[in-house]
Length: 459
Ligand SMILES: Cc1cc2nc3c(=O)[nH]c(=O)nc-3n(C[C@H](O)[C@H](O)[C@H](O)COP(=O)(O)OP(=O)(O)OC[C@H]3O[C@@H](n4cnc5c(N)ncnc54)[C@H](O)[C@@H]3O)c2cc1C
Image (cartoon, rainbow, N blue to C red; front, side, top):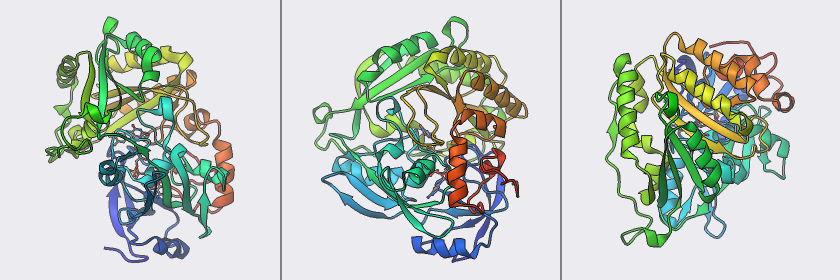
């Protein structure tokens, strides 16, 4: 489709399918072709795009250049003694799992989908169900190579160019293009998880259980019924687990997982398909399906990424798309969490999925999302009154000392973002030094006013 300098005009969005903007998409086939592409400066600016699994406009660049990494997905080397994998930034976490689980290695951090690239994982400094114990993705990087706006390739690690390293981790693609990365994989004895399920009758019981026993589990997450109200507000199913030891797994090969039957949502469902009635019925079913149980052995895919077996599941929300609202509250502000649940369960914007996690201490990434506290995620169908609702919620979150997550955001205002991310000015100083002409920009960057003076072309 494209050689150097040629592009395809495409309507792009994130996973939430809102907003949708026309972009000029370049698909370089080799890493060495990217620097000449930038040098030609055919477009005002460029942003990298992985698999587009951010929900909003982080990898959308209305009217400008998008560098699609789908052809930059080569594995480069692997050291079985240390578990260090070197690969191109367009390699997906799914490809890493497929190649390395059979050899006894697992990713150090895995989000709720494996269809995420290494570049996207670094640029949002993603967290998984083990953040309370292990931290974020960038904390497991030996180094990465970054192509800067000046055309230099910087090797960045916590020791070498550390300021650029920690500005790029969570820096949503604004410091440059990540070319390759060296990731430390963890050893596992099987492809399975030993999971304990616990039904909590309300949010207080769920939080108390997390405080009391999360440390015993490497991974912890709770599904929350966000239509439950009154004494049942926040009733949940906690799913906490550790990698299963070899002896817990039946069969000869503990690394073999039976291939799953793939399902698909073939077209956009009508907007009314997900409504409070259908969601209530699903929630009741899900809650009853998961009684308290100990030591259930499940394959890693079912535990970490249950929605990955349904292709195009985002079409369930209809063609208007949906918003994912993910925010974190400090440990001292759990009342904010309760108020948020009350507001959403009482609003006309029913949320289908809600997920609650305990986060550990913040890492060194200047714009990394996780901070010590609780993070909650809601998927809400897009409707006219959603944007005002989310902005009202942003204010409440801010009052409680919380913050929202760029990977999920499509609607926040610049002043909200600036207050939520107190290290933004440090980030801006590094961005100004590395990229004074704002060669790297996106629709999100301009919407959130992340870079001073970069408001040139709004998508
Ligand atoms: C079902 C689902 C569950 C999820 N669960 C979680 C979760 O549990 N935890 C979590 O943290 N996140 C979660 N996410 C969000 C997801 O992990 C992030 O949005 C991730 O960044 C997406 O990666 P991607 O490859 O699709 O990148 P994109 O969404 O395409 O891009 C994300 C950002 O990375 C930048 N980028 C991409 N490649 C490069 C590169 N090579 N160089 C420089 N910048 C680059 C882009 O410019 C953009 O700013 C989930 C998303 C979905 C759809």
